[in-house]
Length: 161
Image 1 (tube, rainbow, N blue to C red):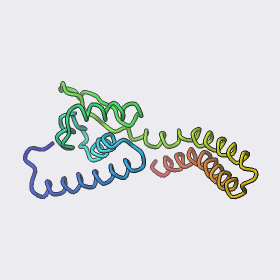
Image 2 (image 1 turned 30 degrees about the horizontal axis):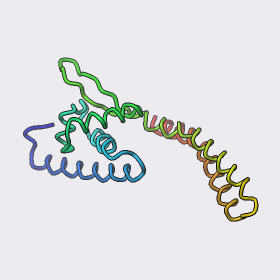
Image 3 (image 1 turned 90 degrees about the horizontal axis):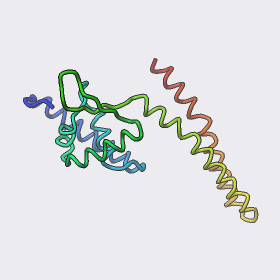
Image 4 (image 1 turned 90 degrees about the vertical axis):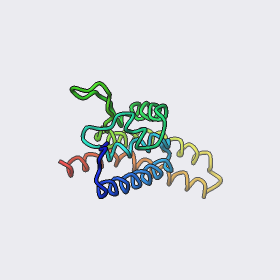
């Protein structure tokens, strides 16, 4: 982080931090643990040389232990990596951009298994037409998602490239 930031840069950085916090809150609301979401969003706005654990702790106003736990989670889901830059001793954290896209596509088996179980629910609800219909509709939606996710990733990669 820059020690002698201009007031304009400082204001921009402050707005970026606020936006990152709002994005992290949305991700946490969708089920991602709060601290990993905050760390991931901070890394979205990181400089090209990434952030050290100390940079992240300072930026997020949290302890080194909080950064360590969040980093462990984000590494397990393959959203970040850490490496030492030439000439440095401290590790830096970086986002793995392709992981976002592929983690979404990897949910296809979850959608398929969920659809199977929803169809099992529907089979047990023969006498309750409304419940049966709900279960089958959600199962159909999950099968649609399972089929479309890999195609959407391919479309996104083609659009990007």
